[in-house]
Length: 487
Image (cartoon, rainbow, N blue to C red; front, side, top):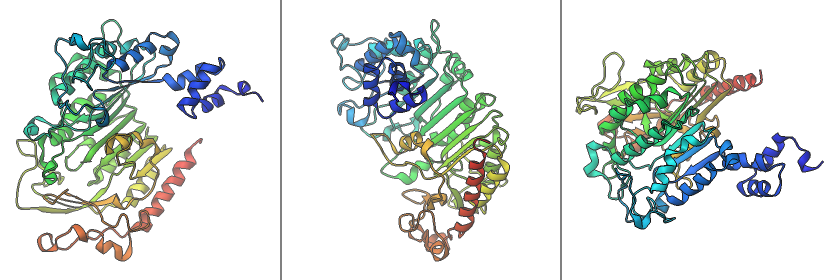
């Protein structure tokens, strides 16, 4: 059989073998050329440089290539290994003027003088001219510094809050351009979204218009790091205000009736501390839910997931541990969630309240199996949480989420001990010395002992001795999930 006699589906598979293969087939075979073009140009990458903007413009002005563009990935700055060491802070000229010396230079952009070029700015304004654009991905730098801690920001910090907000404002304006709005865009992804919401932007007509068209939202949240004393990061106010209030109010609540796909990752654990009241929301159309670094401490979180059982088809829990024991200061007497002070941070107190959460993962797995009858995909474990290709740990895991398997990691149970360092999140030290996921018997008694001071904290908690139950429940869940595929 001749290659050209193959159906389009198999030819598309041939083109997926690699970029060089697709490029060769596009230029040498008229029959395969449009199929290869879809592989090569369905996702346009736009960097804040003149060179990148010119390449995107060439695709935009080619009628055939324009038609195959479905996604545009926009970087607000360049990777660390591409960045000039002299640039410490990026800016966006309020007048949108370029230095004439750099106006037409191919290398002009944030890597040279810290200012996105006019060529890039005009290209950003015109993204709505991609007539079949469906998805927009915005990628920020992984380092953030909020107003409460700007004086302590590292010297090489360069995407300051005002630059991020200006960039996002320009993107919103482009998506709602009066002459060519991107009306078909229904999916938005933001990588390294700062844990801070500008209320003026979030209540603007452009922001509301973009949200009104979305049915898919992917957020990878970046929080502030403080290397000299990482144990104090948990008290930085921005993360608490964002997860407890702003994420719900400005991002999720307006989308309740629309969202089909929701994905939330963060570079630190969230859900309990900082507290995120997802259970106050309901998404009647939700089919896909993916969570990264979310902690489980209350049965209400399980019930919230199951409340979407009528529509939920896919559930992914990436490094989402049950916090079996926690020690914290002031807690609400009824729901045992942390109480924030007037500065939206944790209340300081020497009196610690110890709380135990008795529910185990086999209870969750059984509940998903019986209470979510339409699940055809379930993933659970510890994903790609390490830097790859110049990306941060959380970005790597965020992008690799579709490949997450269903396995039992040792870190599925953890402790939270406020005030301990370098992190209040206590993970078992046995992770690298036991069979994948299996901690049982005598190992349970020594799982946390390396990070525990019995003189100050009392008896060391025992890791849950339920590997057999968890493993059995997960296997039964996966058997049920796989049995529904194609049914």
